Image (cartoon, rainbow, N blue to C red; front, side):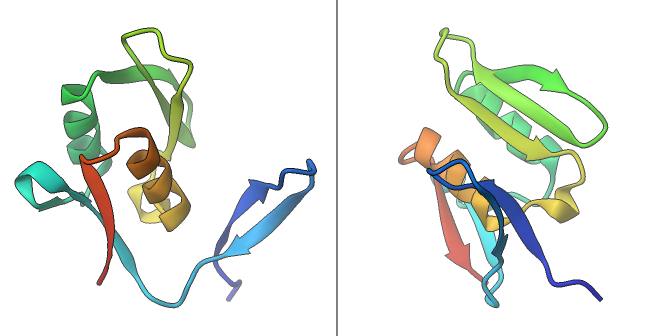
Length: 103
């Protein structure tokens, strides 16, 4: 079985496989203390914060802010592929609304 990870671009433009930590993580919507367990639930919470679908294909869904911000959030369509790198992207772009916790 192949080791898990996410391909990321480093600052120098090189792409590398970032290994997932051994501990499992979860994304929590802070105001409701709700663990995000599906793309649908996450999109609903992000929608209430002004995010909407921008682009989608068979592998990913991209969201952008309705207010014209240049920020994008890219999520795997298959929530089983939702990793900590995606979680932290959501947290950084929605400060105070989400947090990542260890399971």
